[in-house]
Image 1 (cartoon, one colour):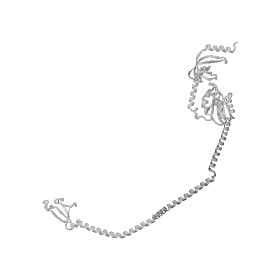
Image 2 (cartoon, rainbow, N blue to C red):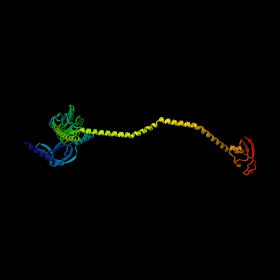
Image 3 (tube, rainbow, N blue to C red):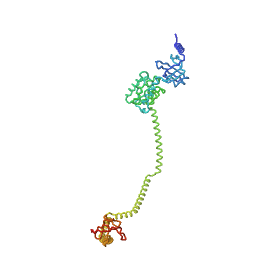
Image 4 (cartoon, rainbow, N blue to C red):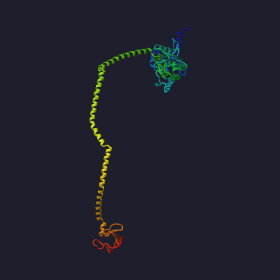
Length: 456
């Protein structure tokens, strides 16, 4: 018969003898760092349903902290052994190498990018939390400590109306359960804010809060949502889509439950500060009033003084107006006389008199002017007649003209045998050239000058 400890030792030796040191490929899950500094995680096979618990002690763990993250695909070097106190098979890791991203983490990153592109994580869609919530809804497990943490904080900070809508928060069907709990709690009358979350756990335990359907349902809630999933180092898609994120359910309760004691203290401080300010302000105003009272003294004297100044200004104005009137009155009189003198009726009468005088003068001077002009005309006519060629012709002279009316001034102006006219004092005769004589009386040519005695 073997004891349990002996059996554990034999199993440990058997495991260590068979395996030795090996490189193992797997995806990190349920990673956490203990207070001692040791790192505990599991390696999961992506293609088969297989998993092994791993531990990396503090000395090596500090070097590989960045690789021991849920979803990371790693190569680890170590040896398998049996942890006797718990009879648990585990792999002691000495070294870690990155081997790419695990399938689960890659799918989660793709979903995160998709939801972010739709604006579900945008800061502008976040709603502020109510300052005085009437009803605080909580969606979490009824058996877990998260709900009672919220209740404890609420009782400590003040009286708050808290309503629980229980849900399964891990394992298969957890996402559907949380969605159904949100649908139910939204029907509660007067709901002001909603806390959705659970206590801490391994990475696999929190996967329900990365479900796409749950994330979209949280985005569609009618009231602001505070996400309190896991611990501060755990960030789920529910944390990103919620209006506010809390590291723990207790912190979520502190965010939404009004601290009555703090409000009372703040109110007391404000009351004391208001009283101090009022006393100081009254003292300042009293000092100002004393100064003003000393400066003003009796207000009646100030009023009387202003009235006296007003009287003096009135007298000055009256004297100034009288002086201006004395200066302007002569100008006004001159202008009035000019206006009277320029009255249209007087101007018309004056013009009409001038016209009558002109007509009378015209009637007197016109016959005399006519006789004078007539004598002058007769004199000019006599002088014109004395100079007229017609009068010269009356004394026995004649004017020889060609048939076209041009005056003949010499023998060269006509041709032999050409007919021409002679203008006499009493009529005209037609003649013909028979002979041309020069200025000396000699013949110009052999043709005699003949005259036809044709009287006109």
